[in-house]
Length: 389
Image 1 (cartoon, one colour):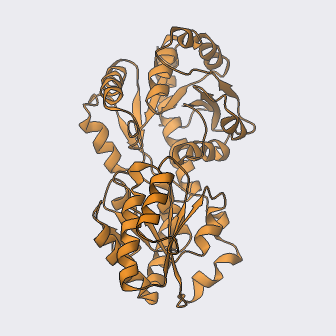
Image 2 (cartoon, rainbow, N blue to C red):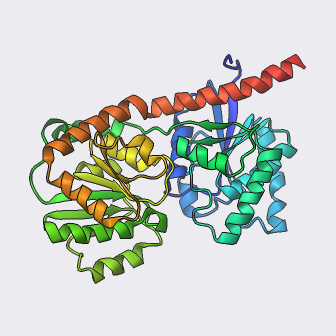
Image 3 (tube, rainbow, N blue to C red):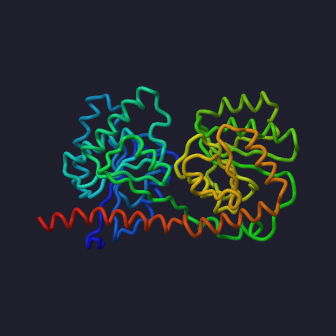
């Protein structure tokens, strides 16, 4: 399908902005899109808090609806504001993220004639929702998929299969567009040491970059730290991230006597600098899409130990760029840590292989081109149809 002469107008819709993986991914996509091919705008279902406002992108139209609950008739009255915004921006594609934005945005977009509504599903749509919300939300999503959506976007084959298994209509396409990462912060002089010789001095540092949420299973990594300490005393575990599981983790660390071996750093804004000092990186989630954290690990020339779930198995090459272990298995996780800590040459080889792989397959440039091609193909189909009618 030839690229449309006029740029495609894409409106990204989120609940709000925060320091989450999906939110940062959307902001990076908006920043790097070629405005001659794709013109972005951003709609925030709520977005009125100070943190969300502080993260809003420059040189991109942004609207905050202030919607607090989809149960509120008054909040549905704010749909007029969204309708006017979509018309003003001449939106060709509304791309929604998370269930509330989908349920609100898809309905409004179709009433004002937006040609295409795509829902982005990275495997975390209902992760934090109670059972009733998950049940009702999935029913509503399937109904919207049949009546209002043009298709879905996932970032890995595992997520695509989950969407298809959730009774997604066969007539609606599910596009796989893999994530990418900006490599510029990983190409300066800070990485000379990791590019030359394996580090052999202890203590060894094991790190994880993830919000402190239940599904990330930090408690399993704390348990693994206890098993590691029983074998050697020169391994320190560093947690970068903040979230609701902080207090339970602090209690677990205290109970196991690991205060000298596990450090909670809170929110880390300079992730490359944090990873520069990490010898082995971990992501021990019970479910994942294609995690940005692993791409960061790879860019930092750091071997990754990840659970064999979701998109992890599509990114981590077991035995080449890292190791895959079963989820919820602290002993297997500890054994993988001990194996890599005790083998500097293997760590170095895996780190270099990871750097090579992320350059070839997961750069921001590669991701942006994949999305621009998708948007132009989708908009091109409707424009050809409109011209021929």
